[in-house]
Image: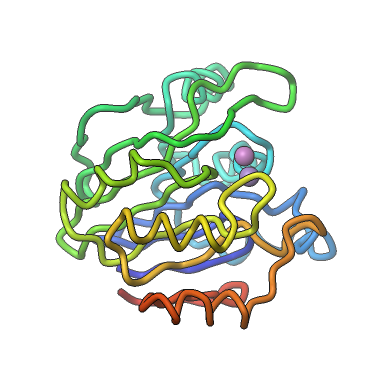
Length: 230
Ligand code: NI
Ligand code: MN
């Protein structure tokens, strides 16, 4: 499994030859603002776009990508899928409670303690995360959330190779909560996201890595467009 980090919560997964874009946030992202249109050139192929919730910093470029890649399938909760379905985009709406099989593996929509509304006020359903069970390993993406006891359920379904957790605080978990979360998840390797994009979610990267290390965990913080193989 290949994971490329862009900025904020935006990642691209490559599993079984399928390209899966998570929470695309480029055009309104202050980090990409100076090279606005250029980010599309990076992408040769996208098969799926997965959306954790309806906040603009997770969904703002869905239409742009679906215009470039006509066959892309948007997977999210029922309400978000409906929202984009009405715009003529291919969608697949799911909700909490089961694994669903896709060509890249099994996918489960998981609970998140957050909120979910589109910029125009449209209700965005319950926020969530994604649990992947694949031949190439198991991966958990929590989405924007605080730490919560429900995370204890995740490792019962199977051992995780990696967890992708927000660490920037204010709107989501901070470093301390993300360490608690990784204990609940029985996860040793964490890719940190949702930090440094805005002034109010800045972190000290070295300090953050040290705090995880002291608890026997590895916090991975990737530069933009850097890839890891797990
Ligand atoms: Ni959010
Ligand atoms: Mn967010």
